[in-house]
Length: 223
Image 1 (tube, one colour):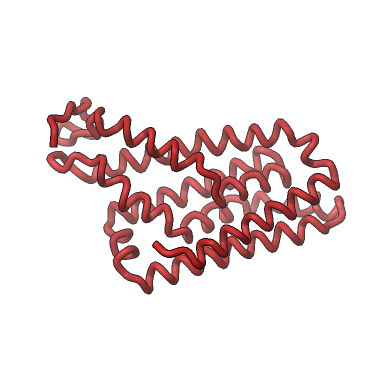
Image 2: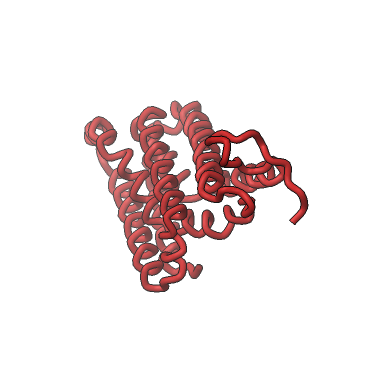
């Protein structure tokens, strides 16, 4: 491995953060992985239409909390167990797929609600928004695979591994926060057009179909 330039320690004098020549490529890869459309973006878009960016932000925080769960699982070695065990992987995958399909069905049902009922649902939605983001991410095995296969390539094994791992997880979470928050704001800017009754109903149906499609893809997808 070529010589690496270590940054100043941020944990203590005996721990070294990720070297700069590894950190920058990881940042680029993290951004590329984050901006790829997925179930998280479909769910955030729906939350903007239901209750605006504030509601969507709760779901985003739930998504990011789910990423932290995967990151801590990696640090604890649970992600390796998940990937090594075909049964555990299948159980988590099918549970996540079922939950995405459930959210998609809920969106399809919402598209047929009268405006008054939709408003009532939006008032109650904040109590569920964080959990929706959290559960959909925790039950998605893809973040675990991403952390397990991609993240270790950017860890300097000659230094303390745990602080480097947690630093990379934190960077990925911050990238997700910036991107999903900006995405929610972009959707909100067009909300005036998108919340017209017919347009909103069409978008709810489209989002529901997308969530169901993602759920089915997760169910049949191999590692």
